Image (cartoon, rainbow, N blue to C red):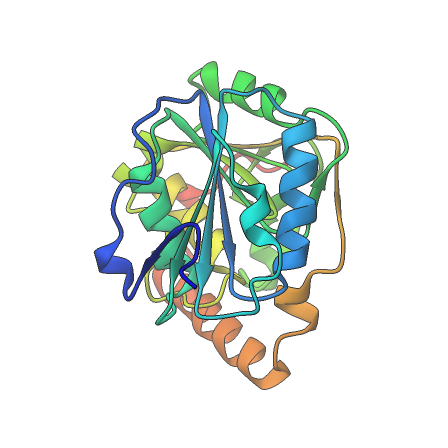
Length: 250
């Protein structure tokens, strides 16, 4: 029985998901635990306008369960059955989005209210290329090895639990690194790329919560640490010491 959505062998085969125009597109990557994606998407639909699209990319061949039930006029699913890394998958969705703004969201993130409108409102001021829920300032005293959460305000990096982007700015800055097959620290690397390209990032309080983050807690620890280290080593190699690209300290 064929799936009720497009299934491709490789990410390079991916084609446009929709010809409809939207005000924003939420991009979700999932390689397992699709029941979390169902819950997250349901909360997203209940707390956002109909002109916000949802693109879900399923990597590999996990148990699909009832995921097809989320499909409607603004919710699209695509599966890459040979699998695709986090960075490359999110980039592909971003490039195909028919909206000026995209929001990268983890399946563990649950909307408790309308988080989309304030995010898009801040982005539409044209002062910031990225607006997100959690992030912070690189700790230069710690030799760039940690990030301090300073709350609402301008930041160096934002995390991909819920990350709103000016789509054009993100693509111009090079988007996410396709070598990041795992999400952790890939969002930080992107934030610093955006800063280097003169983009600004803003952290915002939003009505969100995070349920169990399976991508971290239920990933093989050796794999998690290996891939996280690879992502962070690229940050240190490329950006450490370039304090001039950082946002104002606070």
